[in-house]
Image (cartoon, rainbow, N blue to C red; front, side, top):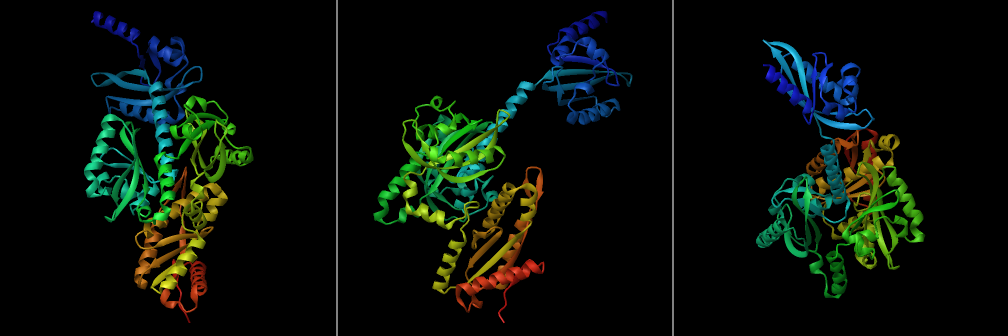
Length: 539
């Protein structure tokens, strides 16, 4: 027995991990040097004046106390818990604590604690989370459709990708990647996927026929690169839908070739900077800015790359991002390292890098692209914030269906609940709500109609076809159900509703102006009388 005690004492004293013998009240009765080294407190301090409660993080103490109580009450023999504690010098550390109780004939005598320092592991986990967050934010906000998959299952998709295949994000995420590949191109796609996962080599700008959720074939140009996602091998694929482009007239061939070249060279540059100093540049940014390697950009002020005429705009953008706001897409001019000026469109977001605030901007070269007619048309007909068609596009589309003399229905809808968000959480939060609402409305209407942002918190809906009142009401209820779902903004939960005014084309007897006026009248009637909807009835 004496030899065993001597061996235990030696093992206890020389153990590389922290060890302590505690009384049932939590007071240290014996500690080893490793525990003193981990905490910064001397053996005497731990035995006389410092308890685990004193150095534990307040947010962890409650759970730790609960586990200890269950141990003393005999509900468990041991437990293991990850906790935060404060080193004597004030640094916050992480520890994995293993606790067991020693009994004699059923009577609890004392507690043995083993403490391992896992601070470095936790810091690595934090960096991994930040990396994944940056990737998710980037994919979500770039304008091209992008998905991430592991060769079999789609792990992440942005709204543009869901729109491309005619479904919602829920209809894409978690689905088999082969569900959206045309059968004629399945073997080709499998070969590329296998090559990327096995060899780690990217594939750029290859044609692939895909299909929508409903089975409709689509022509697309893809770029696929190997990445690590959630600590596992994965593939990030960016798409460009070229179904319509393949139908254009021969006279537009040269323009389409320029557009294809832009896609081939992936015109999306990414810069990350802190205190206006560049910390990271991706390969596309390096190429677009005339550098040969990242070191030529890292350490420079971002303002060395921005044309003097646009530095005031960029400064205001950075200030808003540093205040936690998302900067919408704006036009600027950059100056390459060789002195050449390039036209770019830029958007920016706030992120965390190495535990500190940073700015991440995404930019793409529009020197040639902005000359193309379809880009000008797109900007003229779409809302900048939500990317929905705007009032002008709604009027044009409505005029078109009126000319065709085919049945249709239109709605005006007004959101309730957005003003309190703007007043209490700020306009950035209000913009986030508008973007979420737009996505939900599009998800409902994509198969049956089209939604437009008219202005502020007002939207319009165009439903083509001869729909009955019951069918229109069913669409309204579906939109209402989706709008009522909670919207999460950081630590806040927001809920919005809407009032709908409906006009059927059969009621049209005075042209477009009359239709719009009637829809507006019906909407305000519903809003005033706290109704979900009002169908306009002519006298």
